[in-house]
Length: 283
Figure 1 (cartoon, rainbow, N blue to C red):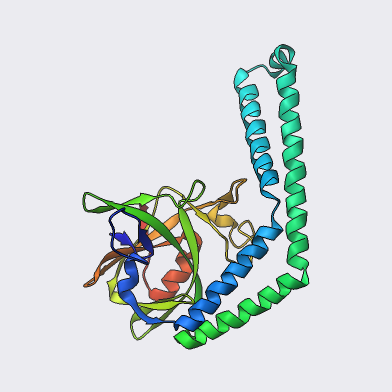
Figure 2 (spheres, helix red, strand yellow; figure 1 turned 180 degrees about the vertical axis):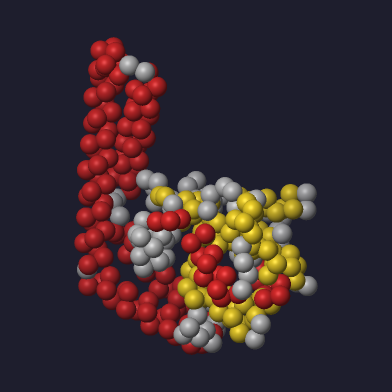
């Protein structure tokens, strides 16, 4: 099985786009797609301005690693007081690393807040709302469509089977924010660029994966640690990588065997939408 939103990065692969593009029934026109891409580039530049300069980000990362390694060494030594007597400079260095990391972290947080409150940021948010509404209308996405997080991945083909590859050095998957709805016995998954139609009869299994998935981006209006999502025990590391359990939905169709990967916090909504119930066993 291949991830419906998997990208084949095998060196000699002749495919483009997602593995599940065989289910695409509608695409946005080129002009609208170009407009959205231009906006995304503008938004990325805004996000870049919101962060600390690259040297400061590197320094923050190095300070965190330095503090964490020194703390680990101190704990593993068994007797911190003896360790301090033997190498006090190491403990001072760890403290300095922590203070520097904390200062850079707070500076970055304040800078992001100031950027988000700027008039330019508000204009971008308003423009995003307009573009999203236009995209939904042109692709025929109903207002009642559910916002559904879906995990995309990269893979290579090895011995005729897809082998997962990490997205980057921090995240295994990319979190996509899609629209999901059911009409006439089919599940529709829409982005701002296209719509996929999958017969509900092709949705065969819904299994919870034992290993947690790491992914980039949080799309929900409430934070991951809010009361609504606390039960799913989602965590995030210092690099912003999210970790959560996921469900793999098996799809068997004449067009091929695929799976849809969704975070655990979307499972209840997916069941209500499609009628597919989770398998209690983990794989």
